[in-house]
Length: 187
Image (cartoon, rainbow, N blue to C red; front, top):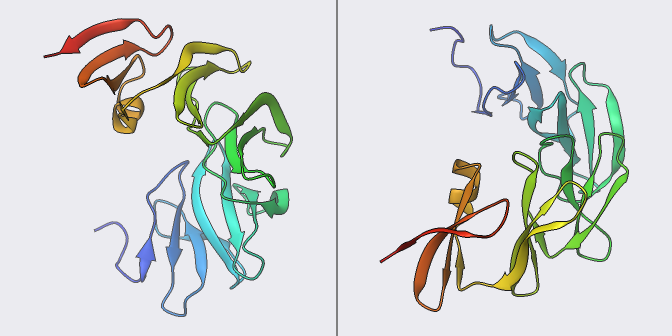
């Protein structure tokens, strides 16, 4: 055993850190030896680190910000529903109820707003507006045109960096995430 069980809850290790909840209810981050490296104030609830940053939510205001690997605030509180950073960007819920991408400074990336937006994987992100989904590149250009699908398999998006399983008109097919072209249909 590397770390003696002594926490009520814990997150997964990412960037060499994992969040843990102590018996007193407070959160902190530990390293892979179990040593506490960041203590958080009692009112902060953490998420996992990615790309050297972790979201922390203020349980009073329900707004989030980001800390660095030393626990220093690098993006001030004021964000809603941030995801983990991926390829230098993360999604947040903007004041108008749309998903937007922000950079590590907390500035909006000029790539549009969406009803739903997933993290970038190999330069491509799956986005939805209304009942249509498509894929964008990091400039906001559509690489897979927006269209209405009956089914979009989000798990296939996360598991495979080159294809996406979609269903339309009772037929399922894998499409290339960089072009939208059908790779093969499932009979």
